[in-house]
Structures are given as C-alpha cells and as structure tokens.
Length: 111
Image (cartoon, rainbow, N blue to C red; front, side, top):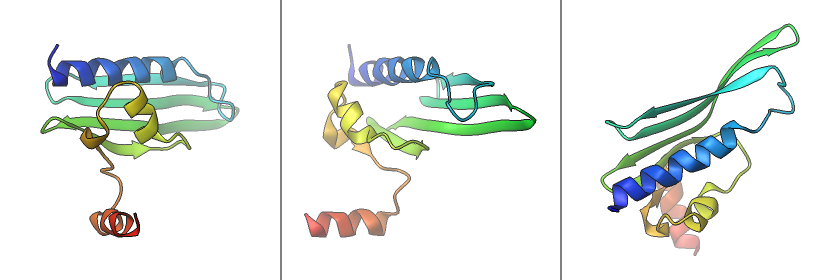
C-alpha cells in the first residue's frame, strides 16, 4: 500500500472511531463525517440540538498534501501528533497547519 492510501485509511479509521463518541455537552448532536477522496480532505462535524440550542461545529479537519498529513483543525484536547504517529503516520509527515509558521520556528528554537 502506498503512503497516501495508508494515511487515508488511518485518518478515516480515526475519524470513524471518533464519530461514534457522543458529545457530553451536546447529547442531541450527531456526527457527520465528510471525506473527499479526490482532494484528500477529512472532516468531522457535529450537528444537532442540545435542549433549545442548535449546535454545529467542526471538530477535526485533516488534509493530505504533498505526502504529508496537515492538521487544519483540532477542537479537542487530544494530542493529534502523538495519536497519529501511534497509528502509523510518520512524525515527519505530520504538519500542524493550524499553528502559525513563526510559532513553529519558536518551538524549533526552544528544542
């Protein structure tokens, strides 16, 4: 299996598992998994009602771009870098797309 297919399968499996988890603070919300296999985009949304409040939100957004997994959105406290590496995505292929480049540079200088 080539790297893109492997990473796609890992991301889809991760999001399928997460989509089966109920939101404690929005029990009426349902998960919506969106996968665009052509553009290699993977999103998990939550949509529904919690009491009288309508809930709609993006939880995760990944993209495979130039052979790397870009994390565009993570609305959880999960360390996605650690989790994705543990699932078989090479650490050097995980990009924090939601972190400003200057912050990445500061992190590299601190290490």
